[in-house]
Amino acid sequence: VDEDELYWKRRGRCEELAWAHNFSHVISQSAQCV
Image (cartoon, rainbow, N blue to C red; front, side):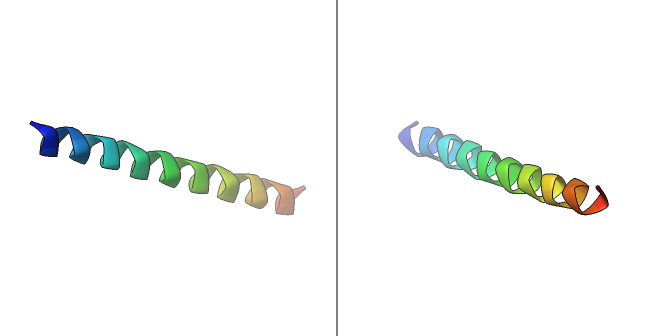
């Protein structure tokens, strides 16, 4: 059970980081357009 919990915590963290990276990428792209 502990391994499964760690897996989901790690997965959630990775998705959070990926979202933040994608968000900053979109911001930089829109800044270039303007």
